[in-house]
Image 1 (cartoon, rainbow, N blue to C red):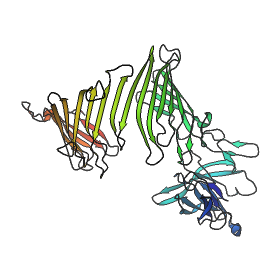
Image 2 (image 1 turned 120 degrees about the vertical axis):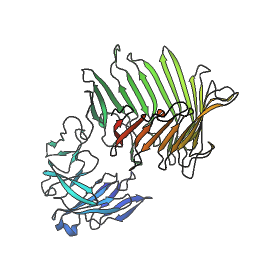
Image 3 (image 1 turned 60 degrees about the vertical axis):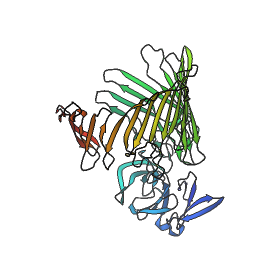
Image 4 (image 1 turned 135 degrees about the vertical axis):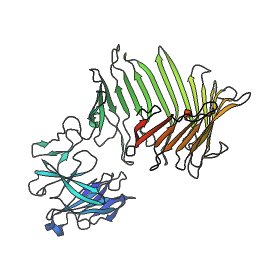
Length: 513
C-alpha cells in the first residue's frame, strides 16, 4: 500500500497500492473495487530505478493526487484525481529524490520537500522545497530557494498552521513564521492614520466537537484611531465541527465576543452567539445573548428556521425571530415569516410587543414567477397593514404594485426582469388615490430613464465599448417640465476605470471635478 487517502473527494478513505501499474482501491458495497492509475510505485522488479510514490492534494481541489518519482533519473510524474479516475497531468519534472508532500506556506496547495538521499540509510537530511506551478496549459517545478532539515516524520507541533519536522533523534525543526501566522491578514492601515490589528489562535486551543484539521480563527481585533485611543475586541470559540462526508467545515457552535470597555462600564460587554451546524443552515445564528457592562443579561435574540437536509437542494428559511429585552422589566418582541416554494418571503407578521395589541404590522408580498426562465423572485405587489393580521382588523398603510418589461398587468410574469412601472397607492378606500413612476431600458438591460408622477425625468448614458458604466447623467432640471425651462447645465459626466469597474473621475453641474 502506497498511501491511504480520500482520492475521490467523497469523505471516504481509499488506498493506493504499489508495484507495476499502481491501482486505486475503494470500498463499494462491502467489497474492494480497483482502478488502474498507471504509475509504478515501489516495484521490486524495477528496484534499480528507485521509483517511489507519495500522495497529497497537489492542485488544491480537495481530492488526493499521486506523485511518482524515479530517484535515479530525477524525473517525477504527477497524476491528478478527477474524483472518479486519475489523469497524468505532468511528467518528466526535475525533482531530486522521493518527495515529502506538505503545505509549507499554508496556502492550501501541496509543496514538494525532497533530497536525493532521503530514502537512503540516513533518514535525517537537509531537504529543498519546490512548488509545482500550472500556467497556460504548461507546468514547471519551481525551486523556492528554501530548505529544511528533517525527515519523513512531521506534524504541526507548535500549532501555527505550518509543518514541523523531526530533525534528528532528539531535536525538532520548528517553523518560525514570525509574529502571527502565514497568509493571514495581520494589519490594515487606514487613510485616516488609524490601524486595525488582527491576532489568531489555532483551533486546538478550544474544545471542539470534531475538527481533525488545525484552523486559525481571529481571537483579537484591535482598532487604533491614530490619536492614542485603542479599542480591543476579543473572540473565543467552542464546538468546531467538520462533516467528513460532505467535506465541509460547519463552523463553531458558539462564538463569544468580548467588546471594548465603554465609559462608565464596570466590565466589558459580552455577546455569546450560538450557531446552527447542519448542512442546510450552518453559519446561521440560532441564539444571541448580550450581557452589558454590569454583567447582566440585557438582550436575547432567538431565531427559528425551517430546514430541509434530507434532499437537495438544501433549504434554510428564517421563519421567526423573537427578541427579549431586559431593561427593568422583560419585553418580548416577535416577528414571523412565511415563504413560497422558491424561498421568497410572502408574509411578515410583526407582532411588536407580545403583551400588547394594536402595534402589529402585517406585510404581504405576491410574485408572478416565470418558471421557464426561472425568474421567480420579482415581487408584483407589496401591501403593508397595521393593527392586525386580517383584512378586517388591519389598516392599509401602503400598497405598491410593480410592472415588468412593459407589461400592462402586474400579474404578467417578467421576461427580462426590467422594472418598467411602479404604482403607489396612497389610499384605497373610499376611492383609489395613486401615482406612478416609469422606467425605460436599453437592449442590454441598462436603465435609460426614470420619470416620476410630477414629470421629473432623469436620464443616463453608458459607455459605448462595454455598455456597462454610466458616462452621463442628466438631472430633472436638464429637461423642460411645465413652466420650468430646460437647463442643459444640469448634466454630470463620468470617466470610468474599466478594470476596477468604478468611476475614476466625475464632473458635476458646476464643472467641479
